[in-house]
Length: 408
Image (cartoon, rainbow, N blue to C red; front, side, top):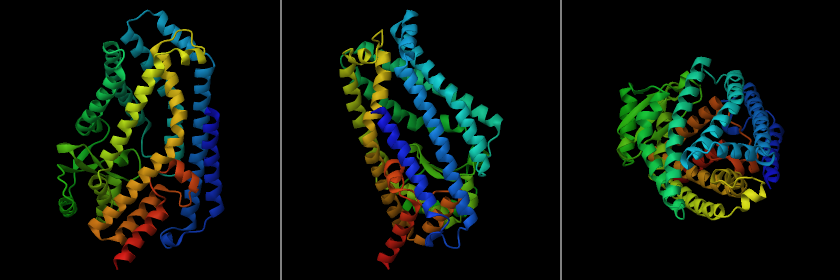
């Protein structure tokens, strides 16, 4: 089943490349006058190189996973941890933290190649090697602290409530995720980027007007120095409750007109107005609760450790095996989740149009974002079904123009 899942993924990647090449360098009507053949060729080459890189990195990851699970390395590693005769919570922490470090180490060559070869080649990367090292070390320290806190808390709950730990772990993870949403804008995000107030008073006034029209109170509107790492553009809401704030990439501010920036922000406001974050959280939390319950039932037996020939039937080894199997089981659900995300994006586009009544600026913003990010204009439908969290850009543009036609 694992090989079947991966085979489907690789086949869809291949179909996507063929579909894009079949479309050739023909420019869609929506991009006439805003894109030339040179940019279209660059877009196709960027997509092709990303796909080849994804294939190689995925293949490497699969070889490592298969070797670890089926090649006996998990059994050796699990037995070594148990031979140390450490307390339960310390053993569990060491088991998982060392695995996370190994994963980070193995990912380093791929991260460097992606950043300093692919992104550099196509003009996106602005990060220095020194900054990459700084980000890596900060991320490593931060993840160690957060993962350690989660591990020790979760393992303590397992000891405290051996039969109902699945519920208490779910409660803890839910509350912890809410806490991190409050904490992240003030403690974590500033570790990596500099945030400063928007200096353009005219734009600031227009943003405040549209947020008030939408019924949203935003504590701050900030500019992020994203250009020191990449030329990709974006805008987003961060925080919840009183910590809500709007963050605009400096690349977005420099490359778009005020009206275009407003439509991008209105799209993000649309997500908030339609309660997309809340709806997604409800689905994910319900799924995680069900998954933890099923895990607790499977962990009570030694079926998995016998099936995979693990000498010591530890909770830690069972959790690794469950995570491996969970990826296979969840694969058929991925298109459903992607479909829900695309539905949310369509609703946010509609909300943006209703707020701004400026379909042409929305289209212009989408065209600029697509061109600047070298987005594939001709993705294969199966690839969209499996991977796209947003509708294809041409579909979004046509939908917006259709809204304007209906209103007129």
